[in-house]
Amino acid sequence: MRRAYHDIRLSDGTVQPGPIIVETDEEGRLLRWHKLQAEEPFTEWVGGTFQVPLS
Image (cartoon, rainbow, N blue to C red):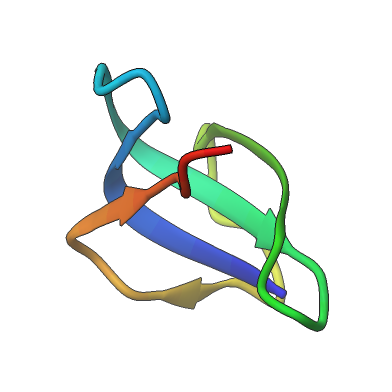
């Protein structure tokens, strides 16, 4: 699943300003993220801050 957020809070507490694209698997586990450079197909805009779970 691909969703867009305003920014992302990493597991160490730092915040990366966005907009950010977050990709997760079917169970909601983070696969990867990157900064949004242009409109991307099949992306749901959520807004707010995505919190990376502590490992």
